[in-house]
Amino acid sequence: MIHILSNGHSILNQFIAEIRDSEVQRDSLRFRNNLERLGFLFAYEISKEMNYNDREVATELGIANVPVLSEYPVLATILRAGLPFHQGFLRLFDRAENAFIRPFRKPHKDHTFSMNIEYASGPGIDGRVLIISDVMIATGKSMLYSIKEMLTRGKPSHIHVASILSSAEGLDYLKKNLPDNGISYWLGVIDEELTAQAFIVPGLGDAGDLAFGKKF
Image 1: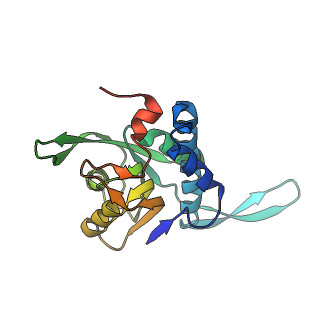
Image 2: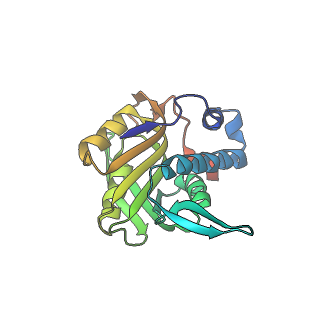
């Protein structure tokens, strides 16, 4: 199942416009805040698909029956750009356990690259709902390798993949290399063009650099 959250009118589109805008991007604090706001909105939409149990809550005047989450998901993100986006998810799912993954691209002279997992930390996920997020899905390889790393920790009941910007090519790559059932994709926008250097067009640039400064 693929959900495109920019369809229709909502404040989400305002935040996507701002993280794309090269003038607004100069304010790294606002950029990070917008990523966090988007994470919160994504988390809210995903929460509608989760399981709930009825709970009796005592008020000053009586008993109210309220559906509450039956279990909090495991939240995973891809370092480093995913951190502010992840924080938005954590604000909503405030009791969730967390996982962090650092895939590393090793470029080759022929402009291809290989992928390795440089760092991974997180809880077991057997039988649990996993939400794995990153700001962008370009080729899809970072997300694929990160999901495979998480699957070494158990078989989740469901996987939600969340990304603000995805290339059409990256999404196709994930769909071809991951099972059709048991995975939902939550995307802000799909951009059609992916350059030979794996840049999404129009995209927004390097989200990690914009959020935290350039790396060397």
